[in-house]
Structures are given as structure tokens and as C-alpha cells.
Length: 467
Ligand code: ADP
Ligand code: MG
Image 1 (cartoon, rainbow, N blue to C red):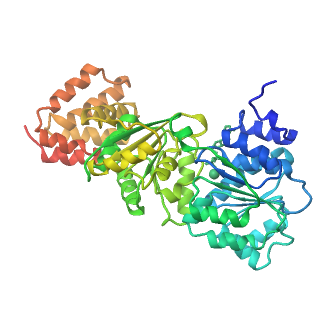
Image 2: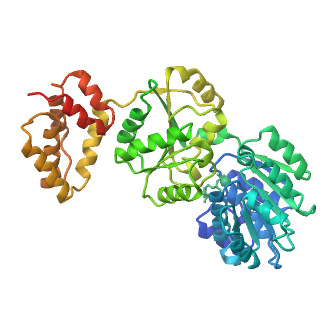
Image 3: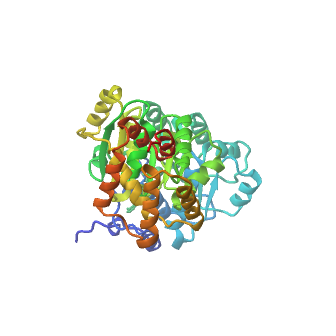
């Protein structure tokens, strides 16, 4: 009988229940390939992009092999505290019916507290390299002989400068262990490391082309340097993404753009390496629970994080290389959902971006940036759908009373208020067109200016006052 589900993998009943509880029906390609190899006791090098289900690819067979003999049986090493917590959470959920205990060990948390947790006899330890090495060097983990060791996000550990620590950690681990190395990319240093710590490994590779073509629509917009913020704002207004990540190339840019978006009342937060752990966790949590729906992030900070329902990814600049591009756009279209990836490029960046698109086997098509009218229209619609508070009402009516301005922005506001208050429905296309026609009396220069970011509109109005 043909079976595409997890049934054919011959897993324990309790593990199958955990998988069902997670809502997984069919193993992802990396899971289908990796799980039998891990169950068979092989060392493994597994290469697959972000969002392909690597966590469960090692967690499921690990859980299946646990004996609950009182030892720490599995060790999972991962580069950041956020990832450690995410993995520990997934292992815990999948292992719910096995009553598995997991402990997370990372820098920044009290050593005493961690030792107490370790005394609880967890079966699975999830750790970041620095703190783990610290515990090992100081002999704080008793009888530490994990039989399965996972290196998760290995390329990321390389990027963050953890490879020496990782190597040293292995000097404390038993030679008889089974070792699994997971990575999105395979730079030479990771290959060397693999030669040192793995024993006759099996290789599994899911190539990026499989992913990028299917679930993610890729678009690019040509803009001029200096117009990146404005372009992002227009696109946000027109596309109204449910949940988006904007990737910037520097921490500073991330802060600046985020600041600008917040000022313009977008629910946005930053995520980059200069923020302390707490601030980073706050951003991630807010993004996950919907308090914010735009995350402005740098590559390193966002790598590997599982935020499953991102609808749009924006590249504020073109990424440095195809790997990074694939990583970034892999934040959307996760686990079979549809997603959209949008890249802003300047004429200067065009050639470079073409190379990246060739690499990921996508044929580049340039889209036209939505016009001001288009994004403005969307903006009006959005306002009309918002309930206006009494306080705001007061301010607006006040403003209209005090002014003898009859054209332009005030008229627009009063129109919007009427719509919102009397009928609570959107205007007809005809009405919007009428408004836009009024707007055409303004000089084109002025209209251009007003097109950039809604919070400059006030200034545009002041400057363009006329009778
Ligand atoms: P990676 O580590 O490869 O970046 P994750 O392990 O974080 O990917 O998984 C990405 C998302 O896919 C998670 O939300 C996870 O719960 C989900 N997922 C994993 N495996 C499956 C599956 N077999 N079916 C459905 N969803 C899955
Ligand atoms: Mg992962």
C-alpha cells in the first residue's frame, strides 16, 4: 500500500501522536530523507534551506531513539538563544506523549539556575556554544555522554565565529556518539569541520531551486537611490501585507527604517545584532503574536527563526549573494504556504541582481512601482475602515472649523470623517476619482512631494496653501 505520510517511517506510537498534535501530515523532503538515516544510526550531513523542516527532521528520530535511562541522551547545539528556545519548544511538543524533558542552556541566564535545571535529568539538552563550553570546562554537567549530537544552523555558527568553541565542545563528547550536521549552506570551513567530527556520514541535500520556484512569487522594482523608504511605504500601502519582514544590509538602516515606519504609524519593530537579547526577544514575540506586523531585520538576526506565517519579504537592498537571497525569501512561503518576495534595486544594482536571479533559476521581471495615486487610494480605504475615536473626531472638526481651506487635504479629511461616521463604508470609485481630480489642481511638484510618505503630507499641505 502506498503511503506518503509518516506511517511508513516506522515510528513509535507516542512519537506519531506528537507529530499529529503538531499538525504534520506529510514529511517534508528533508524529513523523508533524513529520518530513516538517523533512525538507522548513521552520521548525517543535511543541507536544506530555511523553512524546510530541519528541526523536526532531527527531533523526530531523536525522540524515537530515546531510552529514558536517566542520562542526557541528546545534545542539540544551535547558534542563538532564540533558536535554542524554539528548538526546545518543538522537541517538547513532539515529545509530549513520551513525557520528555528538555533543558535550554544559553548565555545571559544565571548559571545556578541552569545547573538546577540540569539536575532535573532532562533527556534532551539544547545549547548555544559559548555557555555549553563554559559548563563543560567547569565540569558542571555530570556524566555527560549524549549518544546523539546535532549541530543545527552550522553555517550560522561559522558566521558568528563559534566554530572554535564548537570544535572544543566535541573534545568533551564521547567518541561513540552519532553526529548530525545541519546547515543551509556548505562553506569550506563547515566541510572541514564535518570531516573532523563526523564518521562516514550520509549526505542529504535539498537544493534551493526546488523551493524558490514553487511557493514564492518573486518581484523586483527599480528605484533610484534615496527612494528606498518611500518605495517600501508605497508597497506596504498597496499590498497591505499581513506579516512582512524587510531586510536591510546594516543595523543602522534597520533602525532608521523602523523608526520611520513607526513614525508613519506602521506596526513595526527592528531586529538586529546590536540589540540586547531582551530587546530582540521582545521584537520576535511582538511579531509572532501580531502586536507588530513588520519586522525590519538584518540577515544574521533573522536567520533560522521560525516565524511561519510571513506573507511578504522585502529586500531593501539586494542581498550580498544568492545564498543570502534564498535565505531571506525562504522566510516566506514556509511549509507550503504562498509567499511574495520583493526586491528593490537601483539601476546600478541591476546586473548584480540579474546574477542572483540566474542562480536561483528565476527569470527576472521588473515591476512598476505603484503610483502615488494607487497607494494614496489604498491609504484612503484603510483610513475609512478604521474606527475614529471621539478625541480624534474633536481634533479634526476643530481643525476644519479653524481653517478656511476648502481644497486639498482638509477636504479629504472631512470627507473621510463623513464616510466613516455616517455610513462606515468605503467611497465609490467615482467619489475617489473626484477627490483625485481636485488634487490635480495642485502643482505637479507638490504632488510628487506629497507622494512620499504620508507624514510629509502635512508639510506638503502647509507649503502648498492656496486659494
Ligand atoms: P528550518 O529549520 O529548516 O528552517 P523549521 O524546522 O523551523 O525549518 O520548520 C519550518 C516550519 O515548518 C515550522 O513551522 C514547522 O512547524 C513546519 N513544519 C515542519 N515540518 C512540517 C511538516 N512535515 N508538515 C507541516 N509543517 C511542517
Ligand atoms: Mg532550523
